[in-house]
Amino acid sequence: MEQRLIESLIIESIKIYGIEVFYMPRTLVAKDNLFGEDVLSKFEDAYAIEMYIKSVDGFSGDGDFLSKFGLEIRDEMVLTVSQTRFHEEIADALTTEEIGRPAEGDLIFFPLNNKIFEVKFVEHEAVFYQMGSLQTYDLTLELWEYSHEQLNTDIAAIDAIETAYSGDMSFYQLLMEDGSVLAFENGDTAMNDGYRIEDTDSLANNEFFTTQTQQGSSLNFVDWSESNPFGEI
Image 1 (cartoon, rainbow, N blue to C red):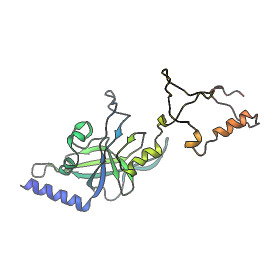
Image 2 (image 1 turned 60 degrees about the vertical axis):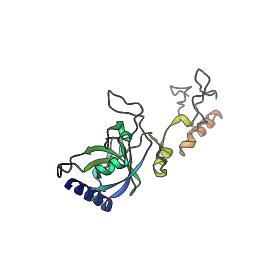
Image 3 (image 1 turned 90 degrees about the horizontal axis):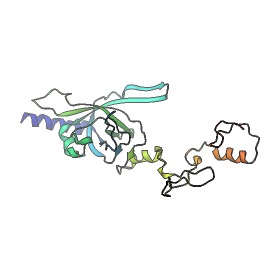
Image 4 (image 1 turned 180 degrees about the horizontal axis):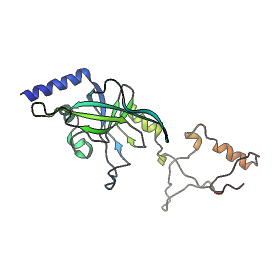
């Protein structure tokens, strides 16, 4: 009886003082058992669930800093979710590898700033067995770096990330130097549509340089095309 009372009070408190987020379990496509990772992960479902922001003073972690790879943003936060509410909203069979709890590598869409955070660590003993049971999970999150994963959650704000930043070349077509389409042995084309650098990069001048070169322009630049790999004019 006491355990159910504490559990109900925690759930009510999180609903009152928490915020609704979207939890996205990861779907493994081709897991590498040697390295324990899956570079082809996709996210096909998003479940609305309330969580309490434990780091109420703001983002922690390394924050924004300039590394040798450029500007990196490593904002961290800690969210608390009721174990009971998690299992009510997300069936065990729908969790990553069917482990029946939040998993490292899953994503959470945070609507306050329209950002996606990745679960880095799951603490299931944050509260030490009140009345002999565990009521919550503490999730340590870090700002997610998109790496061409598939997002098909049917939530526009989330799926728009893949549309805006994906480098999936399956939408384009590769052409040989003579203009013929690059194809497989069975005759199927390797890509679908015509590909132009200018379509994806507004600052690109590839077609301009190609045109000027073909017209015998005196532009002083080195030709690094496929037909001239050594850059000789």
